Length: 322
Image (cartoon, rainbow, N blue to C red; front, side, top):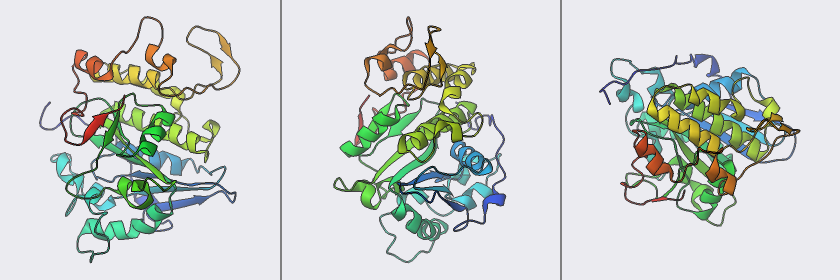
């Protein structure tokens, strides 16, 4: 992979979202009982696919059907410092925002700890969290479910991507997705961290839209009809399939394999289907895809198509679930 990968999409101007419940944090209330659901982007400033999704949700003026929806741009200062000549440097300003959550009781002396203090009450309020990330390497999407069974079960309900990794956190510090009740096996709170693919591949945006759509529908705060045009799960497989590189082709198969929702219309065999049909990770159908396109093992398939399986077999404390 070259030192500076190509940037395949335009970065959104996010300054219009500065004013919210707190800077770059928006709280959307339904007025009806239900869970508080949070979608977080830009935990690292150069991981932009999630910011595109959150920008689109705000621009569409979505309103939750029940409960509360919190949308955030986390390390916004790092994002605003992005320089295409040195794109990896804007991951952070002073330190990694996703390693400070175990020391929020200490004085905030860095850009990231100060920002985490602003985010803290919103993260504590959330019952369910999706933290949108992307990766340095050009490899397949991964869902990091955390070390607890509840995270694994939640990832399977979302249904995509195919690769789910149960990980023990990070030695350098607590991540946001492990903070508070998210990391407590007795708490009903739950969190997922999605790695959508290489930072600036167009397919990473496809994956981010797809997973966010499924998360919001699964949690009940939105229905599929509420999602922005082009932001629903049914569009993701075709968009990823249009990519000509090997990793894009594998991602397209992942998206089909993990399809949690299908629009009304016709299925792959052309048969009429009157209403959306749910699939669950682990179902037999999930491993068959369509006839003649079986995906037996995600890591093996990734290697066949020239992609790394995301180094899930290499990092200490990581355990592949699917």
